[in-house]
Length: 211
Image (cartoon, rainbow, N blue to C red; front, side, top):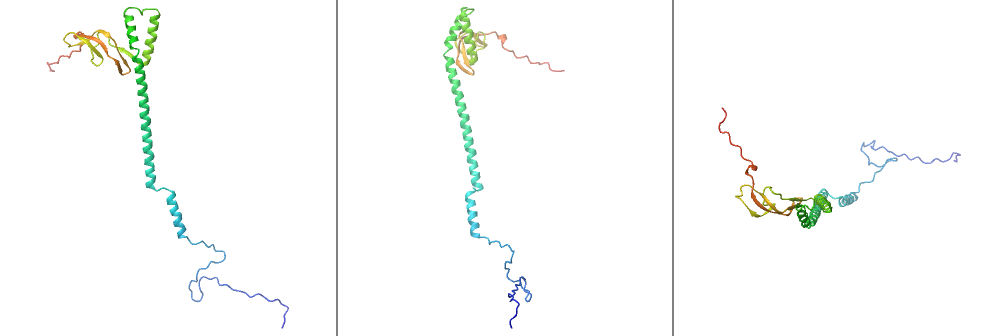
């Protein structure tokens, strides 16, 4: 018998229950519609990534070694700069002292002219004053005057008079000069005995005692 009603599609029923109602056992977990399925971890890929990270990033021992190398190089460079500056300063001071020593004969001539009264006035006095100003600015200073205590590290004695208990400078034959702390030339002098009263005397001890 033919009917006018259209044929209906068969109905399919899907049991999405995770527990079997008859056996009450958990069925295999299958992804349902709408579930987000995460990929299984790739152990081999994780191992490769870890290996690459270990190669790219240095370990703590390697970092400490590189830090120590950097500190050592920095210290060596600082020592090199310090030595270079010290050597350069010493070379400059040596050159200045060498130049100043070449003018000692000029200073001797000026001292002789001054002793003869030739530097009281006139062009020579002006020149002497200018030279004295220049040498003072360079740190060149003379020493050795009559009556100064005798010092064998500063004075060269060509004649000794007296018993030597209180030696002082007698006649200054040639002045000595120093550049800063360096002795350029010792003073050539004669040595004689000075006034003993110039030597400090020890105070007599009080033997009476306190009552």
